[in-house]
Image 1 (cartoon, rainbow, N blue to C red):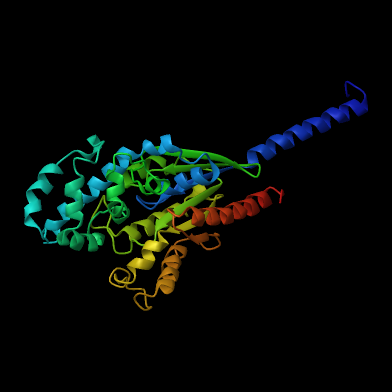
Image 2: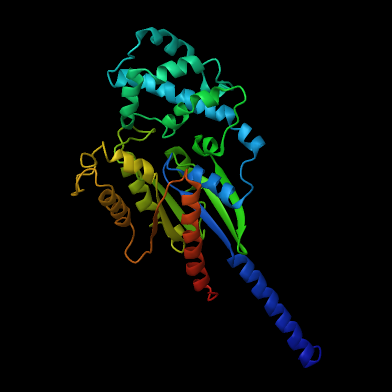
Length: 348
């Protein structure tokens, strides 16, 4: 029997129902998005873009903290190009630079916090024809995609009053270890975006740990069709990415998660196809070499062929260093997530 008047009992019951619905709605409207992909595909850059677009951005103090990393990226790139000279049977055009190059740059880059001692040498080396030749063959060894960007800004970066720009921050590279999160509220929906390490050694740590996430955004660098892994120079980067994507999209841990594919670095792909053929690495491509649109479709089809039948996949070509592009793409992603997941709960 009820312990109070019927109207009071009904009122309490309705209040409890409302509270339960409110709690249910709150849980449903927190979207956990896991960024996955191989190393250097652009996951960390996407997180930075979310901070710029939906967070507080990078103020002057934040950007100043990136100075040492920018310096280290610049020196690391030159060290890798120098190492590649022997590998590719090339040499410096100005042999007088050789002793200084290997002596002064024989440094632990993690200890570098100033660029001034290296600036004159770095500028001469970048302008050396031998270094330019080795740079043109960068697909044959490991070199940051931001190398030309930073060396074209070397004078500005070496200035005493240098403060990194937002673009400098976006293009800085540091291998991700562990889990990095960014949370933002958009139209009463909380998005929690998680970036995890992409190198093989990091991948083992996270692959089982995110059962039940709302969505997977898999990021693949679509320009890497002719490059090899940093961890294993016998493995093609795009083949590794395709294999990882095929594994992840079939894992039972992610059976209820929506899948979104970012084919990133489309700007670099557009430039690369003009001079670097794809057929030697992917002989199944039957189109014309240099046909950017056709090659894009071919790459997208290779990824789509890895998904199970009946599994939806939402694909976007992206340029992670371009804020307007990422804002446009994420608006589409947000709409997709709202449509899929609110429909699942009969809320849309």
